[in-house]
Image (cartoon, rainbow, N blue to C red):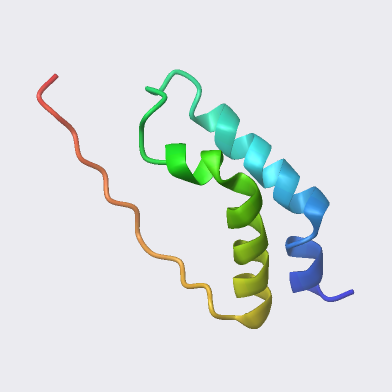
Length: 68
């Protein structure tokens, strides 16, 4: 099994998803990743395929802060 196959294994994807959910505790429910989490199964499959194919590209995160 290659490193990429290990990285995109169901176990690793589940662990990564758990980390993502825990990191967003305390944030409003309709924030930046709501749609991603709502459609997790579809997103997980597409992400696994894109990573394995080498077509996924990471991009910088944009953060906007209000005065409040």
